Length: 266
Ligand SMILES: NC(=O)c1ccc[n+]([C@@H]2O[C@H](COP(=O)([O-])OP(=O)(O)OC[C@H]3O[C@@H](n4cnc5c(N)ncnc54)[C@H](O)[C@@H]3O)[C@@H](O)[C@H]2O)c1
Picture 1 (tube, rainbow, N blue to C red):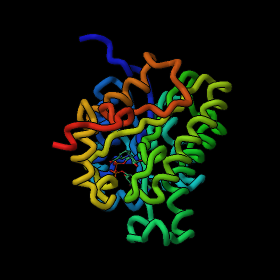
Picture 2 (cartoon, helix red, strand yellow):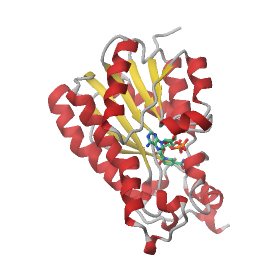
Picture 3 (cartoon, rainbow, N blue to C red):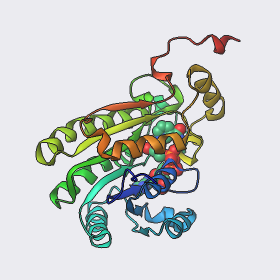
């Protein structure tokens, strides 16, 4: 067997809730490729998620952390280094939640307190994670940090509501923090803009099933699956993509470059 491309690497995977989660597939693929990982999710997700099953299967420890809490993030990054025996080589931020969407608030009638929570959970948590990791000097040189995003950051998808602004903020944090990490330790920071995927967070968007079919027809390669996304994440965590940073990378079967697809009219 050839060398596994993440052999000897250590990483943290946020956001594996159940077997449909994109982060679940990423965790499995990282371990397949020889990485040692720590899994984390919000304390509340431990109760109804299936993360313990994944931890047992992958021989990975689980450290609960609310990604909006600096204290939880400090604990996570400190303990992960103890458990895995050194600094991290990669981190996946796979977190999204909109309070206004959950509560069915129309985009033209948003509750701003809820919006702040949405931004904190879905975007500011990414900055917090990177700031804490940098202060604790918890990343190895040439490490790789990824967050998952969606094309609603660039184009209007009405039912995506305030998550569109969350993703725009998330992508901007990747560019801005990516500069500082590159200068400090050659750490690269990117976002992967994934096709619609049937998961708990994805299905929370109104009309998701119809939209999933539409995006599949619009994309010449079809929608990218969670498994395909996991492969892309592994490539981005590996040493084969060392000069890629501060990018928003579309992983969408070609959707983002399409204007019109004849298949839609059939
Ligand atoms: N599913 C899609 O169609 C799709 C498309 C593009 C991008 N994405 C993005 O992919 C990422 C993963 O979503 P998914 O589709 O796998 O759904 P998911 O519901 O399986 O994952 C979302 C995760 O966020 C976690 N989370 C929520 N609040 C948190 C907090 N305060 N602290 C820590 N974790 C918290 C949840 O527990 C859950 O594990 C999200 O950023 C999502 O926006 C999803």
